[in-house]
Length: 221
Ligand SMILES: O=C(O)CCC(=O)C(=O)O
Image (cartoon, rainbow, N blue to C red):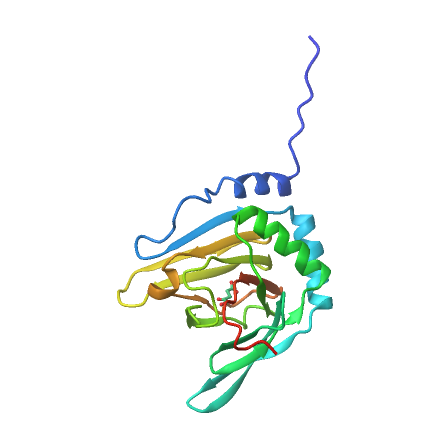
């Protein structure tokens, strides 16, 4: 009898397959907010391509925060881009958006197609390794569309992401994979904080893009 030759897909493709099993309609928050993990929205090759492109082409600046009147400069880098030179004020510091690069516009279109929402700006964070992280905060600034969707695209090292309720002890944690998308919507920013914990042993960089909608024109340069 003629035997049939079966070949297994490469392990990377199998991992991708499992990542696709995430249900983007499953709200991860138990109450007072909406967080959806869409899993992988691009192949690992595409994610590698965009990671290297962004690492080498964006205008990376150290982030700053004003804490009790003192300006703190972070090791983590940021870049702020938009459809207009929007000003965005958070942690007491105002930034003015640079015009979209081709790569950012491609990613914006991809994320818009996945989420069925349009965005006019993007805050990009570069975590060099596990020593870089972001403390608990919410993205509820006045400049942003109230209860608008924020779409968070991850490229690079896998990291833990944690939500904590503002008034109760409840926490929700997940791992954000290379090439994955997470959305935060509805009243999430009113009721939940989020953070990216520092972690030992991660030596690879991670780039995170949060696509947002700025509504206030007061900051237009
Ligand atoms: O790096 C991340 O996954 C989250 C970034 C974040 O919390 C923010 O940009 O507000």
